[in-house]
Image (cartoon, rainbow, N blue to C red):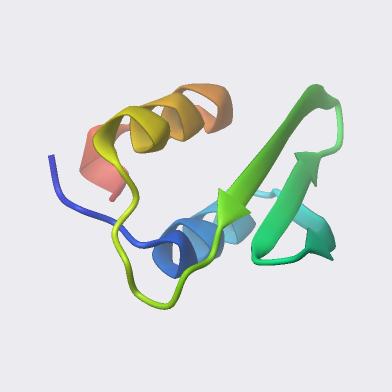
Length: 68
């Protein structure tokens, strides 16, 4: 699986229709109309997200591995 930073994931979420609701410290909180889930993406420069966290976000946001 390709390593992805928080910044890159945030851009992808916005393309998929997720909206940034607020920023709490270094975490950007995203929601999507019609979806009760909330995604809090850690934005730490260009440090890649850990695989488990990335897979969790992908599952919630319905993002395929080929879209990364």
